[in-house]
Image (cartoon, rainbow, N blue to C red; front, side):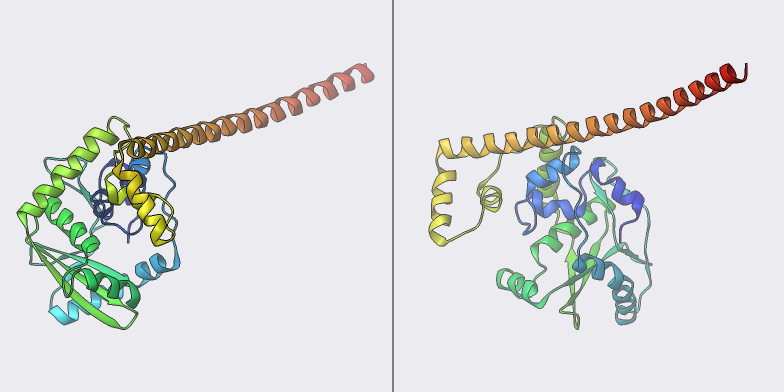
Length: 275
């Protein structure tokens, strides 16, 4: 579970939960969402019941892992930073004592887990795999264990062994994203997966139309322009909020001044009458 300090620092770099979106393999957000969050224009991720239960059950999963594997796990509060790439950051659930290894805890529904297993039978689901690959690259850990509570009653354990080619690709893609988009505040250009996830989902026919749209040059340009307009809208919303805040502060100052003026008038009247 992230501390308040860790949450406040998420815009300073790329964390493990951002990676699958940047790689186009997240079912919840895409690289445009991550981009907006990093430049300060995105809305913070709202907590939901699944996230809250995940946080509550994290200590339980760690205890069960310790009993099963006969090890001890510490829960660090600090954010780890890659020694070479300061924008690569890691907030890990646990470090395995006596091992150069990481523990990550997850909870998910039976339905979601079954969906993942169709893609990668008995293998680590992609979002988890990419997250811990990122963590191992940041901490230079030997491996990462992922304990997953499925459906509230079925505990699964996956292990990520270092895959240097995968990590090399991750670092390259993350570096491109951070330096070409976040640092320059230039919206990312989308591939097919990101565009399809951005467009509204409907029928199979609609899917075919969307696919044809992004295959055409004019369609790609339209979607990219639309994304840029969304960024500008977010900027304007932020400026409006800041202006509203200033107006509110000015209003409070004016109320204070009016009260002070009224007090002075009363004092002057009192003096005039008594005189």
